[in-house]
Length: 98
Image (cartoon, rainbow, N blue to C red; front, top):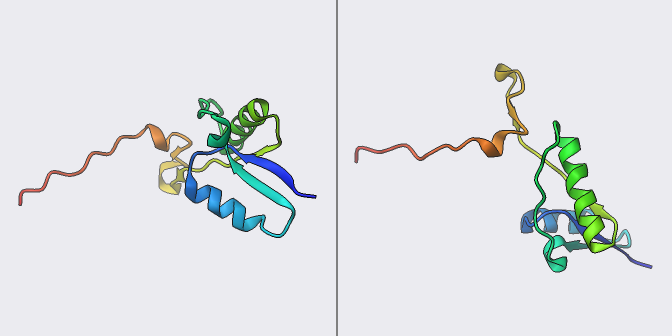
């Protein structure tokens, strides 16, 4: 028996990674887009909290178990910043004199 689970992400790269990771283990990983699930606001204070928020949101709408992950960049010199706030930083391309 194969268990269908929803990946709470619209990232096709993550979908492929999870499908490969769970291949041969009786899981079928489905993208949240298949259920017309939009991204949910990530209001957690940690990567774990944000992953839980995303998984619960997808599971509730799809009616299936869901998995999620969250990531960012933590720099020791910056005491772990920007962490979960990486996506809020806008870095413009440098102007080039040539």
